[in-house]
Length: 97
Image (cartoon, rainbow, N blue to C red; front, side):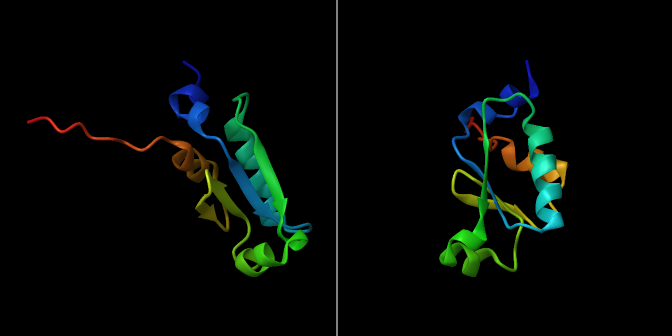
């Protein structure tokens, strides 16, 4: 089974990277995220925070920020391991009695 299917990527509806032009950490993060996504059907949306004043106010000192399904899950120097962890589906424990 492909990694993207094992990792739950087929259930993720929104993968967003908040970024800005000239940000080398953002460029590195985008490359790492795209490498992890590989051939999955999930698509990365890159948002330039400078085009929206509210986003700029919220993220200017935090970028790059990776958001999955509307939840910020990683920021700053985003590693491939951090991306994989963020994309992993939550473990649900079965309540055996």
